[in-house]
Length: 279
Image: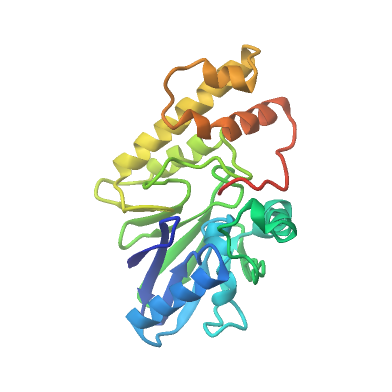
């Protein structure tokens, strides 16, 4: 198993080796980055067959390079991902891409001229095992957390967990498009309950961590969720909720989206669609 830390987002791209070939996890933030990832993989592993690509969730920085790996590309690999990715693309990534094409100045650093939204060819709606030949990987779709498309990979023989953006190491967790601030802590708590001392955990961004790191981040997410729920129950606005505490476990200026989504969920209102927030 190999981790490549890629690009401006410090994205974790993982390559899992088996006797039958390579499984690649996540594809980058645009087609150019996807092609660069594929070139790097070719330079390290030669012409070994890429037997599949897995998306850990739908956000652009993990999926907008899919076309470099998917059917019709030089890799011509099947794409595995949560069964809700297509719907998430329609609600969030698609409108964000369309808004950028109408006015690229709104996100001038993006390289999305040639992006094609390539959803998984193999949608995953239940725990699925992939056998790479001598190595088995479990694909485990999660309930609503960082998004409604989170897919965890677990390598039982190696005790390695690939969690995507359910955990982040090189920056704070992002309450981006389609996040579920009230459900996210429970997802992580459930995963922590299955981890053992010595397990290795690969976050969506940053360095490999131990289960203790995941436990701490789950507790921090739980604190945010509990505070927002209490503020909502107390009749505070989202602005008042964030101002009610001097210290938060993550930068307060990045929690406005969390507050808005938590309040929407508690009010029974739909989450916003067509978001152009960061992932």
